[in-house]
Image 1: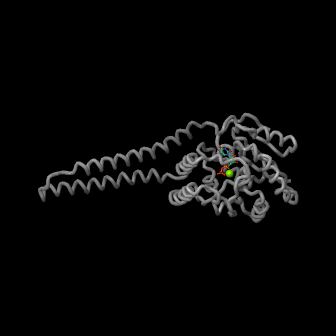
Image 2 (image 1 turned 180 degrees about the horizontal axis):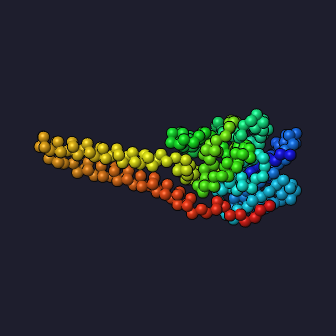
Image 3 (image 1 turned 90 degrees about the horizontal axis):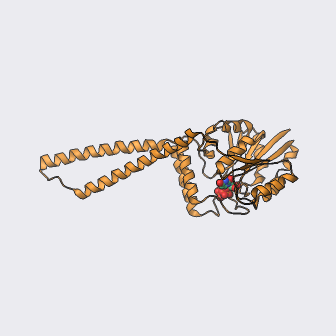
Length: 309
Ligand code: UDP
Ligand code: MG
């Protein structure tokens, strides 16, 4: 008999926990026909509401339900990793608790797994119902990543993905601290089928991602999957050295040949400002990589478990 593990990261999702369970149960009846059982792993990411309590109640009535509860909020990345570590299934799928990852796609996903795909991933083709500014920056991020990273990034990609045990093991072999799972999926490779769907509104509660949390998450993605910014910093250094060289020659020739007095305080101030600004920027870029390396070197655990069912 095969086993499917469903990993559900939850942070303050007291209202969605049971809604998700009911909908998933309804949409996974097809598993019976293929002799596959289910385990449902709720990863409570340090919720401050009744999420853990509600999961505990559900678990009493259905022994397919498991829960890992963190000692505090460690973020969705840590929650997904914990779920992958705890999952015992031959197949593993990660789904949001708010039903924005439609469970009705599961049956189709299994069809492709049977056809020989190692993973079936999903992407949103619309971002309807999302603030336009958020969509705009998300698009920019994916366009940038395509240019600066050799790993594949797909616009609108979700973490909702069905994987075989082999692929899960490959992901688990990457215990990096600064995790950007969308990149890790692409990095490990394997034959992936992409399914597309229209954006769905969350069933209850509200989004846990503020605009700034997303900005810092995107920096995480850039630093984790590209070293191009470091190269750009070096390239700018070379460019400004060349420019300075040309200007020195220009100034000397103007003085010696045409006898013009050396002048230009305002332009000097502008140049100093520009160049020192760029220097600060480059130091900042370096600092980002240093900071991530520092966190990586500490080898702290990705999460701390308080309770497990
Ligand atoms: N989530 C989490 N930890 C966090 C933030 C979010 O486990 O620190 C979970 C959340 O409960 C949900 C999923 O990650 O199941 C996606 O979050 P959300 O729906 O808020 O993001 P959005 O869909 O708005 O991008
Ligand atoms: Mg959501």
